[in-house]
Length: 136
Ligand SMILES: [Zn+2]
Image (cartoon, rainbow, N blue to C red; front, top):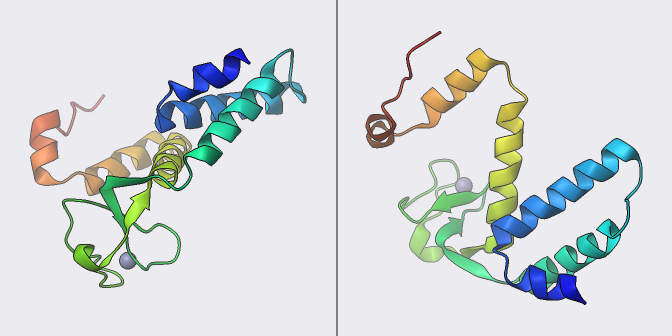
């Protein structure tokens, strides 16, 4: 079972990306080709094994829907949950949310992408990225 060995060496982020790409390929052609179902199965099994794994990088607040906060944030401004009283986030959930947000941004008009990023970046990160970029 070569796929099983291959997936154990992947990070959760890589596994989620592989899964997404396989699902996209399946959507386009209407069915899986060749060995892909085995790979998808191996990826899903590996993600299943790691589903209880938490990350120290994020914690969960009590909000409905998006509830991740980076370790740098002490408190959720919406529900008031505090980092020290809250559980570490599930690593698979963090990576799924990062990929979901990335995909959502790709669906926006360019001006709206700009507005979202401009709104989202903290001042220190803006300076580091030399944001805003020159407008076309
Ligand atoms: Zn919250």
